[in-house]
Length: 299
Length: 299
Image 1 (spheres, rainbow over the protein chains, first blue to last red):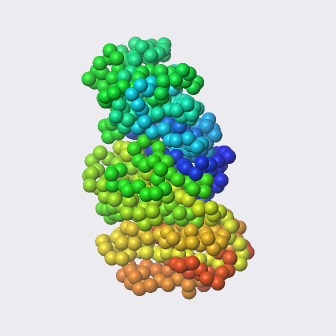
Image 2: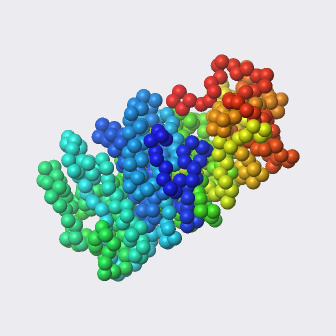
Image 3: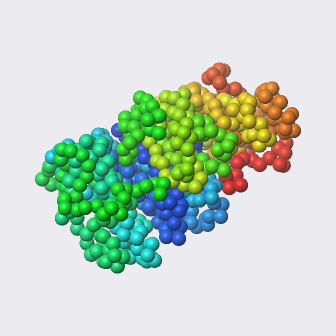
């Protein structure tokens, strides 16, 4: 697999030794780790090895950019049955490499072990380029709430897969999320006060900012452009497109707060404001009782 | 779990955000990752949560010190059934923290997800303190081969567990390997040319150095002090103590090569020499056909 993993400039020592060595130019390294388990986070009949590689890389790279950092490297642990086709593992490596190439990062190391279920453990490293990390705890009343990237597409795609559909732009969005990688560092540069990767759903993840920052967040539902794709899928499935946008996870959009500014960096749009108080609310929208606040990993 | 994980000086931002931030004082970070899968790498009836935490941390910290670096941080992914007792997970965190404390490292982040089998994914980060990384590829003919730490104890402990024994120093050694953490950076300081963490067995792991360095390694069997514990266990089980020492993995000793020096740093002892040629041999010892060269992850 390592032969399929090109090494970029931040790599000082790549795969094949006890450990890799990665550049950390500003004397700090950002690090985040995630596990993906077959049957819980993905199904091999819904997701190719290549797409799983793209997706696993994307969700971890998004955690790094949500700190305002630029990703430099991934480490990938793969647990799998001995019967796993070699071509699947090679496609996985290709998917990891392709997603990393979007941000100039490299897969610098990993581990392959035997297991009954395919499990992927991905750790992402990144470089803050001299900036302060943008945590969840810095939002202040008066800040505006901003969003970059798509919301609801992955949830709609998953619902379509569950209903038997196997292609289309929403199914593609589930298979290969497209985090707005450049948007994180760009907003950090103009003074983002808090930022988070939307992996559990917008309301749940903004709830983490509200809680860590001890503020209230008020969203303006007229700011969400649902677009024809979500509206059409909601019509076909008899579901609520706005609910996908507000509670669907795994698009890996970025949500953030920033002091009121005249011009936002490319890709960011205003969706609400920060106020005194607690919790996240959507003006004029009542959460249907059937919608959970976020993802329960043990359900 | 995070409340049980003390944060030490290298931690600039600890658990609880999208990512952690760790100091990398010399503008580089050493990084290594390993997976441990229940039923393959451990059994919960043979290993407590605490011991698994010690063991999982130890094997990853050992990878970092084998580069000549000082460990700074771990990231830990835990996949487990929802039925896992909370006390077990808490003990796991305590074990991770206790092993990290031996080297001043901290568990800075992680992920907890649902799965049928307990799987642990550990990534270790470290600081080279301005030194060159000690790879597997720098051994030169004329160097001496040196060893720090115990060998064969974990394999003997595993054999004893398989035979129904549940305590004793060898069983303890299997449960909690004791890598010689200080020895790695100390040997790097005096000019180690190659180094490896002995996880697959001494012959297999020295084989990696021989291959990467394009040299032969010749071991002197009279240099291995088997000691009374291994000899007694070998007698009880009818097994070969020297075979445990040469092919048993998971003690996480360090094996290295270094130019001929008068005085080795504390903990290191000479066990052989580097010569022109290829492969690893032991003077006067024939490998029994029943002994595999190393660990097969898919067996």
